[in-house]
Length: 368
Ligand code: DP6
Image 1 (tube, helix red, strand yellow):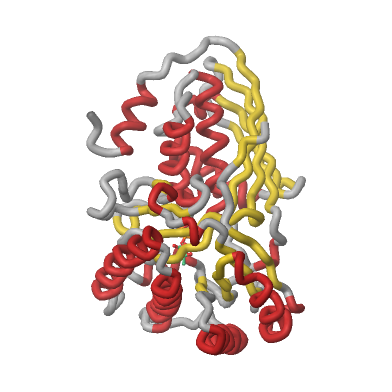
Image 2 (cartoon, protein in one colour):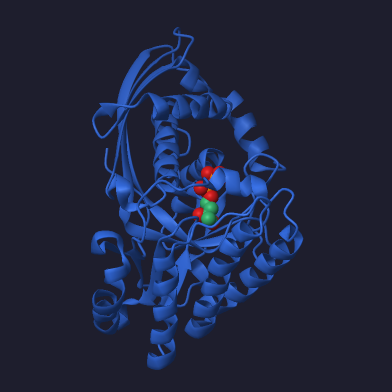
């Protein structure tokens, strides 16, 4: 049928029959952030990953977006007003305008639509949590929902999710994984037939029940703006001396984590998650120029987590994104041991003692 999702969505969008009436409407979605366990680091072509990644979608850390739209066929341009936390935000507005212009190739009705987008996050701006995954996830979902309302297309939820994931990736790679709850995989691997570099797929059909209630307590070591953005970091992989070895490792780790997730091997899972986190930062350290996002307190916390694990023999591990904060990953059944450990031994190394307790979630929700 189609060789790629790119083909599919370009062709399908050309076949849409445009209603010749004025159609106003409203849609709203909330979409959670996600934490990668196998890391996406480095790109090829446009927004395609060098290697497949696996993530866990969170429950509490979300972006909430509502859109009021006014479609009129005879109007031949898109207009956008963007409000973040009730305030007009020109910098974000420009980024979203560029994005909308880009994706109008797959959603041509946007060129006849006025949009008023209102968005906020459920986590504080200063929390150091990357918001691009949840915000592009939510934005892609509202756009697909508009298409559904205007044309009656994407009526199956699975079709809506597939297109939303494809579109979210074009805004921010990690965002495509947030469209699904539980565990997601983004990137082509021979291990899963339906996997693709163009969108994420849900992994929930293979996940062992032991992973169903995993928690992510985010230790906020530093809530400041990162010195080197993720986009710049991805670019530094282009001429990275260890890029090829990293990609091979990521493919190997992917195979291993899929086995761990399927058969409930928690110890192996913990070891892989940490290896991925440390490799991500090793890539940063050895980029040219190299850079360090970890802070002394990140290392102190990591050291204590490792000690806790070896003394208690529990599957408690850490992961990192492209920043100094440490994500503590553990099953909910260990909360009564882990909470006192966080409060007694880790919170003191966090900025103002800040820890955000999140956990695996069921994915985006339509509220309007
Ligand atoms: C370290 O998805 O933020 O969090 O595609 O340029 O928006 P862009 O990058 P982004 O990169 C995320 C990198 C990471 C690892 C991950 O989430 O897999």
